[in-house]
Structures are given as C-alpha cells and as structure tokens.
Image 1 (tube, rainbow, N blue to C red):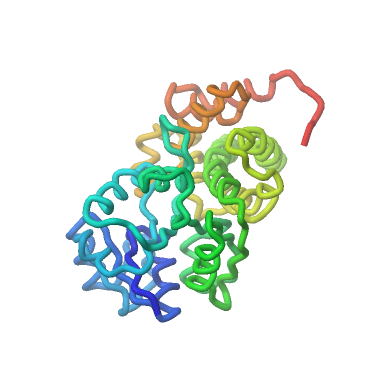
Image 2 (spheres, rainbow, N blue to C red):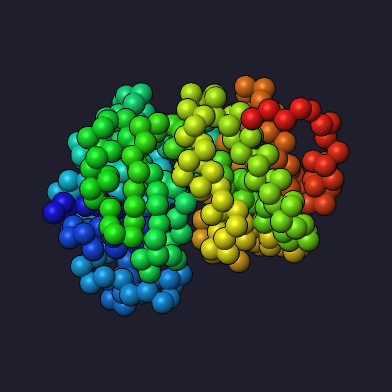
Length: 333
C-alpha cells in the first residue's frame, strides 16, 4: 500500500484515483477550488461523472501541503498549461524525492518541452529518474465503469515504469510498458489537434472518408514532427500514438472532437470551450506544436489550419478547401 498525493480532480483524475483506491492505496486528491473539494468530500459525486459514486476511501482537499505531506508517489492530472505552475508550488513546499507520474498530455508553449521535460527541468535535470507517465486510448467515462482499457506507461527509469504498472493495473485496466518516454508523451499530445480537425470536418458534413484521410495524414504529420523530439517512430504506431488518435477522433467522449464539432456548428472557439466546460488540451497544444514545427521548418498543414480556425478566425470551410487544394506529392510513410 502506497500513500499517494494526487494533483487534479478532473474526470480523468477521479477515474485514475479510483483505480488506485481500488488497488488499496491511500489517496489524497488536491484541487485548488476549496468549495469543489468540500463538495466532492461530502457528496462523493463529480458533476461531469453523474452516474459514478466516488469511493469513500478517496480524500479531497484544497490544501496542497496537506495533499503532498508524506506522499510516497505524486500523480498529476491537472492540465498541460498547469504543469509548471503547480509543480513550482509543490517544490516551494517541499523537495520532491518520490516518483512523479504525469497523466496530462501536451507540449509547453514557448519552450516546446514535453511535460516530462518540464518537470525534469523544474527538478534541475534534463531527464529526472523520478518522472514517468501514463498515456494511451482511454476515456474516464469508460474507465470508471471498468470497461476494458489498454494504455502505456513510460519513464526515464525502469523502476518507475515498473511502479506505474504495479500501481494502476487491474483486470480491466491493462498497461504495457514502453521505454520511449518522449514518443509516448508526444503522441498523446499531438492527437488532440487532429481530433479538433476531425470534429470540424464532421460538423461540416464530411463523411468517414474525410475523417480517415485526416487521421492518416494527421499521423504522418505527428511522425514528421516527432523527429524533433527524438521519438521512436514505431512508438507512434502503438497505443499512445495511433491508439490514442483513434479514440480521440472517433469518440463522443472526446472533448477535442466535440470542440471542433461545435466550431463547425457556428460557435466561437471561446463559446465552444465554455459549452464543454472542461479543459480542451488541443487548444493549448496547437500553439506549441505550431511553434515547434515552424522553428524546425517542418510543414504541418492540418495543425496550421486548426490553429488558424481557432486563433485567426479562418472560416472552417476555407480551411478545408485550402487543405484539399494543396499540391499532391508521393505518399511517404
């Protein structure tokens, strides 16, 4: 049994923390919103998971110091934009000496760092042996009901990868180890952008053919850009790449897909985000992926088009037209 400090009380945080509790671990979940922490502690219901009762063994607090006190493991489920500020707060309270497991997916704006690189940097090293991640095709709405799910764990150090596997594995939550931490993190981040594009295409009346083209060419775009982060190309063919791309582009549970669909229906990006009411990671990662691509002169037409729709008021129909009229080159995989 481990004492675990859990950072973040979103739907994914609740789902994974519930697995940890099911496996017999002591878990304290932190959220900065005191009223929300009190509500979860008292009612055992998350507003976005209305058909699920939070295990009684999970404890909620808005006191970060209390959440991390005595923790043998820290698990993160905040947002990609929140990683740096939250861990700065943690480090200000106490030195991190225990494993840190990241479950958010994104690329930091401005720096182009993957989330394990962000935390490693805060810990004063390039690749911290304490840092690992859990990623792959998974929706909280299915995990909480024990629907069969298969994901990937990765870490800079093999012992942390083994620990993640031991902490989270259940008969219905199957975890494959993969030592390519950059590849696992990169695939999980980039698929959100392609999912927004697929939502837009569906919202405009595009069919399965259109979505298949976006997903396939999107994966090609991800693979090209992944070379910048020294990812193993084969990693992107697996659960954290193609697997996560499929579930995010095809599922009604996908916030990124729904965000794109709402934009195609006529919502402004901010209006669509507010209607979803939760973090839409592709909005943030679209900026950082575009920055990374332009810095290294790598063409990413789907990412560029998605960015222009969200941040430059490009009409989605014009974006689709521009993509379809690009010069055709031989397909390279």
